[in-house]
Amino acid sequence: MKESVTENIYRLPLVLEPQPEGGWTITCPILRGLITEADTMDEVVPNVTDALKCLIEGYKDLSQPLPKILQPVDTSEPLYMETIIRARKYASYN
Image 1 (spheres, rainbow, N blue to C red):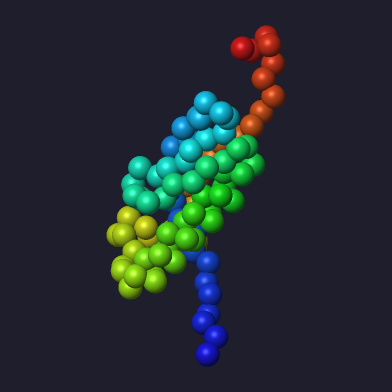
Image 2 (spheres, rainbow, N blue to C red):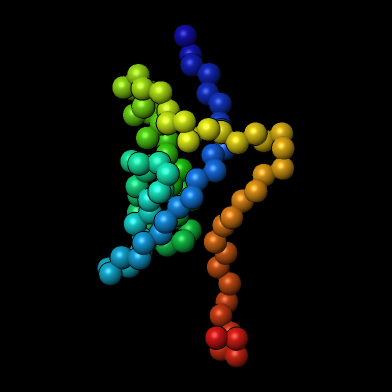
């Protein structure tokens, strides 16, 4: 029997810690175990998505419930989202 798959949207704070060799180590202060890396800003969301999928799969494989903090957002309501936007820096604006 084929398992049905649904996608959820999660709201998670992320900490991007710059690394000396370049790129970032990314963690979530409210979800222990969510850790990944990214070399560019374009890699952050896909890498965090992959790490979250692996973490959720790990809980499932161990027959453990998801942490209470990891609850899908209600997509029938307006969503609040913070994000990082890359914009050109102009010398006159520092």
